[in-house]
Amino acid sequence: MSHNAVQEAFERGLSFHYSGEYEKALQCYQEGLLIDPTNVEILNNFATVCHSLGRLDSAHEAYQKAISIKPDYAQAHCNLANVLNQQGKTASAIASCQKAIAIKPDYAQVHNNLAYIFQQQGRRDEAVNYYQKAISLEPSNEIYHYNLGNTYKEQGKLEQAVNSFQKSIEINPKYIYAYNNLGKTLQDQGKIDEAVSIYQQAISIDSSYAEVFYNLSSCKKISDIQEVEKIKMVLSDKTDNKDKMYLNFALGKALADIKQDEEAFKYYNEANRLERESFDFKISDVKKTFDKFKHVFNKDFFEQRGDVGCKDNTPIFILGMPRSGTTLIEQILASHDDVYGAGELSFVKHGVLETMSSNLKNMIPYTVSRLKDEGLEALGEKYISKIRKIQPDVKFITDKMPDNFLYIGLIRLMLPNAKIIHSVRLAKDTCLSIYRLKFAHGHPYAYNLKELGEYYRLYADMMNHWHKLFADDIYQCHYEKLTTNQEEESRKLLDYCGIEWSDKCLDFYETKRDVVTSSNYQVRQKIYTSSVNGWRRFENQLQPLIDALGDIN
Image (cartoon, rainbow, N blue to C red; front, side, top):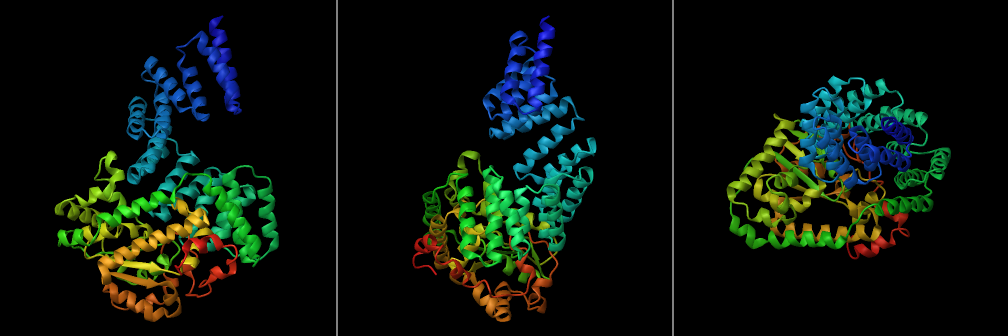
């Protein structure tokens, strides 16, 4: 009788579980466990529902109990790994996945899950290997191909990413996420028409998928009020704040395209408000960090260090604020046969973090300042090794991570012969361009006009500090001068880098290369000046930004 009761409770729990009625499912599973507390299947499902409800500690406890009863329960080890990863216990999560694989080597799901953990950790080569293993075990799973495509995209291997997304769609022609990321990858490759077509296919499959509307708006001009009304209609049915955020950004762009500026800015404000409410951020924390760098990396410090670091002159760092012209500068340089444009690389910051134990990672730059000469040289050599894996043969390689402006002192220490280009654009134009954009990650200051202006002031102060320290070693390239006097400024740019002139640099928009940035559409156009002083269109709406910027132009 008790066995039948347990089975009945389990089956009722499954029914509620699959229909998303999690609280009812928990009740049923609990009924079964009261009768048979050692039933590992019910324990596993109970834990899975707890995980779905965000009750991580309860899920952890139930999975552990199931494993203690049945140590070779591969599924419980796999599921426990997901909880541990979400709890930030990465090493334990990896160990749980590896236990599951040892028990059941042909378990495709656990290979996929381990790959995802490695992907989150930036260990992308390992992630690729495990995704490929999952696919070899279960080739018809569209999610594994999709995940592999995302990892290839993060590696900058866009052709492989396209193939993976296309395979995912081939398996499941209605897999909307694969369409979206395929569109973004084609956009990065400069295949704008193809990207537009893919986004439109995605909308035809699911006309409510918010992010697609945002991505579509980013790579085409809206000229038809009907398109605006369509996005408004989709927005009217949304309750999820993330969906509403994407659609408000899309509407802001669409209305700006048709010159309805006042209404456009209302949608931009709402999009930014929704995004800003989704995370905690204090501009005072940024100030503390920047002050630490100025305090440590001062004139006396560099005079005492002398001639240190790796003397390789391969890197050209292009840095500054996002949307300041860094992508344009890189595209001009990368049009030269001697230069490879590597895009936004995280190697500077991560190279330092990898040398430190977890309890020291919040102590940058103090830990960097204590590195001995050989440690700084090793950091430089490690950076060179990483960029040479991307492109082994070309003479110069650009790294256009804008945030590297904070690490200029470190760059001078570990790579003293590297070139540093500071991209500068009118502050109000830069900040407006940032405010109209949803970043894929980072930049928490971007979603409030006052905080954006305050951050810009801190950035400008930081750059003044570096320019005083290093004077002519940092080349300042002004976006407005570059767009007005293209050839003259391009020649100066190449001369600073020690690169002979090439007319190809004038025809940068014809250069076929992947551009993984929100500027990927603009840099495929000829130089234009229409965006200079573009902030004046929205002067009334930008007052909080203008007040925060103060005397900065």
